[in-house]
Length: 219
Image 1 (cartoon, helix red, strand yellow):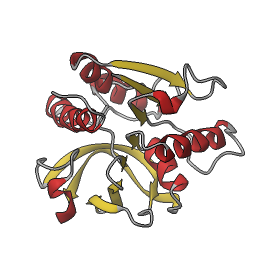
Image 2: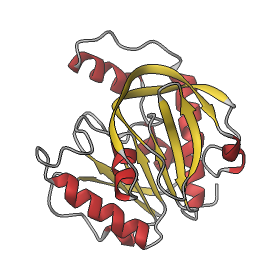
Image 3: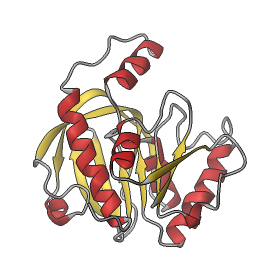
């Protein structure tokens, strides 16, 4: 099984998701979308994960690659490839699906998230605790795409949705470990957020394994 990781900058890597994918015996191909050429046709992969980054999803005037990534997401979703967007990736996915994206209350560090009733049987979030501390780092947010199912919320707003049966957008960062969090804090002149990163890796790994199963992998 081959998965494609869309990354937007060196300090926002797949993180623990790379470890989980490799532990499962799958291949993770990483593509920095600022480079014009994909390593292979995106729709040929078994799954696509779009990760985070510091640009905002409506800043194509500063980052022209945003428009190209929107077309990649449109193509893979149209081809029924399982797709997961995380933070910026989730915001771009929501935008591609016609939902509003824009400035939202800042959430940085571990923030309580609650699952909706609809998340109970979700392949990725179903079975997680009804409320949990999720690692966040964002100043934008997304609305709910038409026809999508809301899966999680925080006080700041929507945190997760599912569109159809093979597309997910998350606002929080299940891939982040302590080292990534410390690097982001240093760049932002902040103290590294405190929290239980080992427990967070375990929860994030469960979400990732759920996505791998949607992609067709037996775990």
